[in-house]
Image 1 (cartoon, helix red, strand yellow):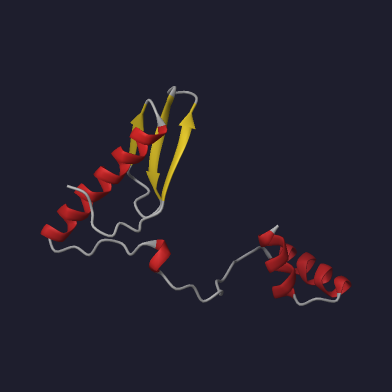
Image 2: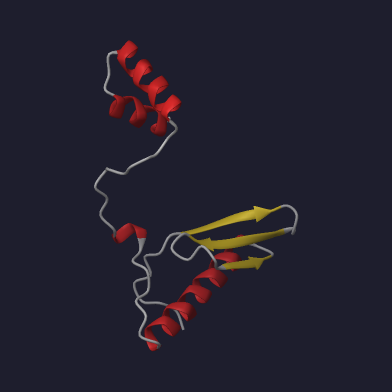
Length: 109
């Protein structure tokens, strides 16, 4: 059984050590599916996710919300050692930008 309106985030990549493709789902990081071609890897992981979601629903658990359906505020906290904080603050001041702007530029790059 497949999921209706499946909006989960899937990725297929080659695993050199296994000589196969692996299908992955970002919302279910512990799940994977190996196959000899990318299409089968995608089909396999989508089926595994559908089975897990159905099992979760049957047991009263709430499946994770798809990343595509989530709203992001644009804010998150990052903890760094004091020396790194000082170095970044100095770099921001020298470049005439806020620390938030500097961090955003570095993360985007």
